[in-house]
Image (cartoon, rainbow, N blue to C red):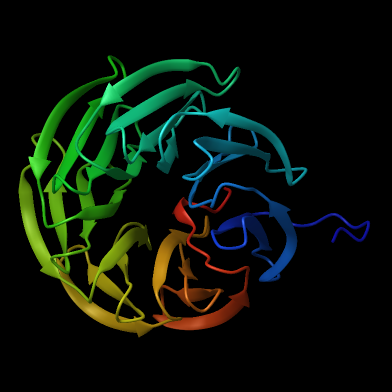
Length: 303
């Protein structure tokens, strides 16, 4: 697909689970400029801006793939164990964290050598993960346990675990590290936690089967994908209430915010498209065709 010209960043890396591929969207033109083959039913995405790498979890491949985010090429495969799903990278770009759905663990790898550093026991069926901006904490959504684990990144030990709604999956942490938001698939709501003791601040009803979340406009709005409603709920984080419902493609799942902090990208599993939302107008401003079964679970846009 390269025609000899240089492409403009940033890129959005969209996992197409049914196609065993990654669609690379050039966000300046809103076009797919390359498709990269990644076997193992890819789902999760984590972008390491410090090392120009992208990590792709492959549940059927027993680990994760490594992409070069500049050359847009597959460079490595790393074995983990059971079925890797959620994936995240620390703020310094030195460690990558992989949630194992069946083993109920988070594996920690060095991003220089991809050697295993530690395996951390968490709750049942760990899913979404997020690292705080200060690189102090890793938060893990344990779907079957209905809990969130807080892992100390200095000791690599679990500091706290707290109950949230039913079957938490995707989560977000604000820039100040003061709040954690988790989408609870079976209870159709979002739990808001404060950081210090993981105490619940609020529970906010959203649409049917919320899957993932992202923050935009300086953390003033939280966007939540509702799988069975084909909508995105918009929550005012000061008022802690839903202020809008935006129609997107069918079965929206992964969601991530562009580095401009204004445009929100939504992967629509059944439509094989990505919807682009303007966070200021709360309207869909573009729809991009991708591969089959796009999920893009995680932070999938390079900064």
